Length: 234
Length: 234
DNA sequence: TTCGTTTCGAGAGCGGCGCTCTCGTCTGAG
DNA sequence: CTCAGACGAGAGCGCCGCTCTCGAAACGAA
Image 1: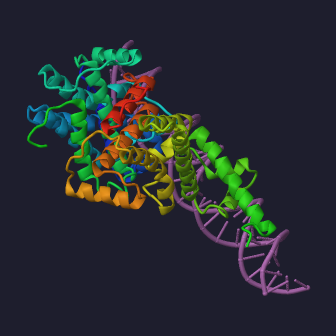
Image 2: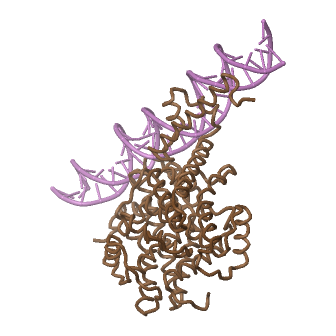
Image 3: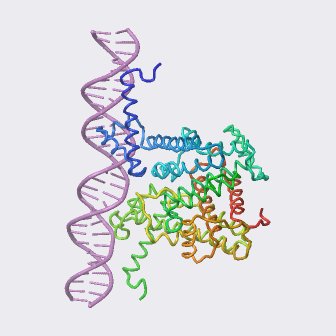
């Protein structure tokens, strides 16, 4: 059962792709707020109502773009992790820098996924897989270092609920990370994206703007915080 | 020169206040995206065009709400700092918890100021003062601890640009904080609001949700990170 | 090949939006 | 008292998301 059997199926797949492409183009230029179905249809030479044959609503189209954005940043950090050397701190640094670079080159996509949820609020199940790619890349780096005995920060007791949540994450990801290191990784994850968001949304204007030096410092200090050993880069 | 001399002036001030009040009400219920001038006018029993006598545009009205939101969270953290004991870690904890509590009770206001910038992008000068209240509260806590010789993390050299930016912040705020501690405070600030944003925007669903235990742990670990001495609470 | 079903694009239309302009009216300063 | 300025109401412009209907085209089964 080939996915594209008939001419109709092929045309439908093609048009769906073109709509997403044009929407992504408008998203990159105008931002999610200003993305309009009518403008997408206009650009594609069709009437707006025809677009509803492919996406039932504007929010549905945005959800597809959200998934693409998650996959974009996920692929970027995974590629950076693969290219980085074996040293855990270098890997951590590469992943952090890749996340920031992606956000700076795709600010509206970043805002779409890490900024305000667009309508009232939503989080379809299709997004959780792509959304996990960045934290998994971070956790994998920590897991490898921990497995090699390179995490130097001692474990301390966690609150019971927190330990249980850490166990759930370990179970779900299959990444065997000591719970204390896991929680520190999540803390670093929130710091990383908090700082990138602050940089992109203008909160650092007047203090750490431009943010390059601050960001570099933050990456090293959070690497210390997790317990990565020093390397040649710092 | 009373500010409200004539009846007209008084009526104008009153109506301006009522418009902002109703807008704030709609913002709390619907979020910034769905806030509409027409709905505000409708609720106030006037026609939409009349509203433009008081606010030249929707964005201008939103800017006023942004300032109010900054002042709201700023007042919340300042009150928490004032009520907290003298121990620096307790103060830090109180400020962090107050920021999170404010965000959880005012999610749309939080999204308005710390989420995606609403239109294309903007940051009027009127917002920088109110926006500084939270970081100043954090920095003040660190300054007091440092002045008392209670910051235990040693200073290390900073990159020249970063040291320069730290000096600018010290100059602008008048808060004499060692540059290394200042940068760590900014890092903790980004972590705090990054974590709150992740919690509110659903990024922690499936891992650290509900986030109470995680948040408590993050606050203590970041207090360690800055160098606050332990206290009875941890 | 024929025929009924399904899919599709186009068009008109609904209600809502931000914003502008015009026109009477009312107010308050000189 | 007068007259300039402030004001609210109304109509209207060009957008928007979304719905419904209709005729043509594509399709699968007979």
